[in-house]
Image (cartoon, rainbow, N blue to C red; front, side, top):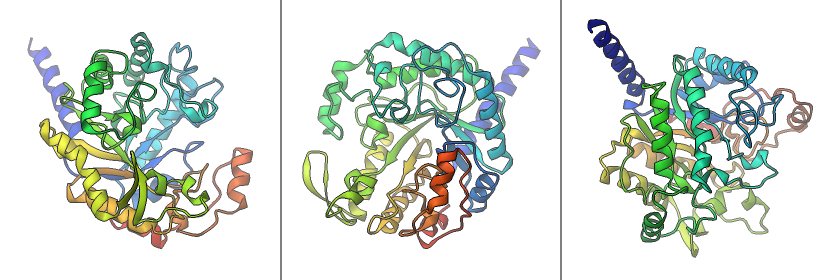
Length: 388
């Protein structure tokens, strides 16, 4: 009995230690690269004063259809060779002084669209039975990673969208969201219930590691609105992403004959013209804060898991500054998107607001070689750097 109590005490202390990382604001970056990081990436990120990295592995090469999960259509267990690569990457980041949040872009029955011919794969939320394989995957992964000292959280899945094709418009009104949820609660599109089931299963093998959950509709900041309570587990981090107004911040905007400007009038939700500026950014980002407070969730359990703007936007620096100020005013955790992305340079802020990436970057991508660019800070990146 004494031994059992001792074990419980150690287990409880470990759980407390892991979540305590998130008790004070943590600032980091997303690394969503096509291959494991170059030797300098993590040390350089740490040298900028980042404390954590949100790591996605789904672009990495595998002998199987889908990295780590083998095949999203038929999950049969973790691919050991891929798991070894992932663990090595976690250790690289950790030894550089960074904590790591593991972030799958795909789950069984939910293949990331960019690995799926640009087609949205919504099978996971079409039938509740499809949840079982996703749960099995996370139990398997947590069993393997639970003792790794560098893990700061498991981010169940990046940008889920059970509402898509399910009768709810993106950025619908609060009332419309809540009405939709009352109809769908308990069904296959019930995102909070999905998280409850998956967390319950993870906790049977890993009681300690914090778990990060993205809001619905691709982690939109206003999509926690319909969640009528906090999740049951007390080591959960609630994550949203911030690219609004997407019509202005995305690369598509630069292709317009007359790109939208920031600050400026930009379409949003069902409105053709909304003035987006520092005040609007702050107002929009207050939505998840209000929701958290209403449900007794401390703000140190809330974070912006991604935010950014295409660097060649007329005033990306002002947008980044406005978003960071809104987040920091409320002491939220955050991770900018992205750091030294080796497949797309649109939000690679070290390149600055105008610089072309160069042919060597694209040639390396074609050959499957590491990004050859030698990076350094820029006036645009300094907006982020000074807040890390």
